[in-house]
Length: 412
Image 1 (tube, one colour):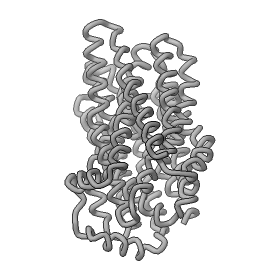
Image 2 (cartoon, rainbow, N blue to C red):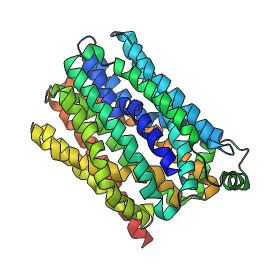
Image 3 (cartoon, helix red, strand yellow):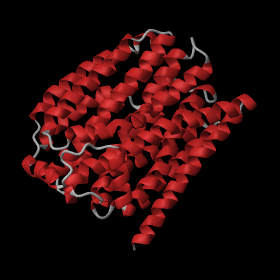
Image 4 (cartoon, rainbow, N blue to C red):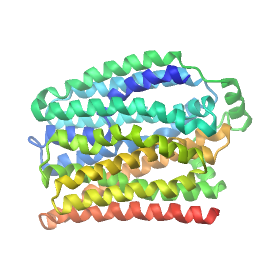
């Protein structure tokens, strides 16, 4: 199954890279800043930057739809619809209506991708044993992220040279995504009958996943509840700082689109294959709480470096910060996709993943706009004061890291 999954995930990485938070945020900032009010564009930047996480709020729909059903056909349909939504961005005019269309297309595309992530988690759980799961799925993720990095760089290059043509790369990426969906039809789920039987055996096969089920899982599993609390704190800070960085890179440091995409998307993604094997060995060696208590500090360091670079206007310092982002994202990707499995039984893995990504959606809905509103409020009070808003996400990420360390100490 590994050999059949490599190419489809590499191809689908092309349209995915174009609706990745930082890349599409730079696209919106560059394309609409000259023609629309700055506050409007900055809020749009926050919305599209948070869309990858915000869209996960509907993951319970996908978890319910997939529960007790064959996975591959559903995943193929989701991939194809995702590619179509990405392609719609190519037809957005440079006006208020075009900005609205772009935001909606990004949000709907990311909602469909939330379904892809929710469904594929169960496929990977069934196909790869726990002691090698991180290493096997990590290799698949690498193919996906190389495609994302390549298309992100191409987009940044076009935005700097022919911004009017940049949107058509979205149409080409959509076609690539449709090819990926077609190729994924060859994938099979090993012993899928056992998976379906396990789901039915949980006694919830006919019960739809809902916010009520979310509350029940969190109430009945206190360890998972604490894990989700600190993940929310940690993740909200990470989401908040991304959109703020896009605005500050443009308005304070005056960086080119290519440089911004390189720093926030391409370089971290290209470095992930370098650091991912080490994180995978650490993940496979113990519980996700022990893993997060170590992995989380790499993001704290990365954000600290990038904040210092922006505050002191030291663009060169952004590059080591971007490298640390690559270190952090490599580890965070494994924890995000697989961490819930250390709390769930096989029959409930889909629902635990649903809880995880739904809460990710809540913080994606709230954190980036709130962070941008704080920035705009401070900036309106005094020009240049908006940079102080970076203290909020940095504090949240650090608090989340401390929370994971305390959880690890409680387990020992």
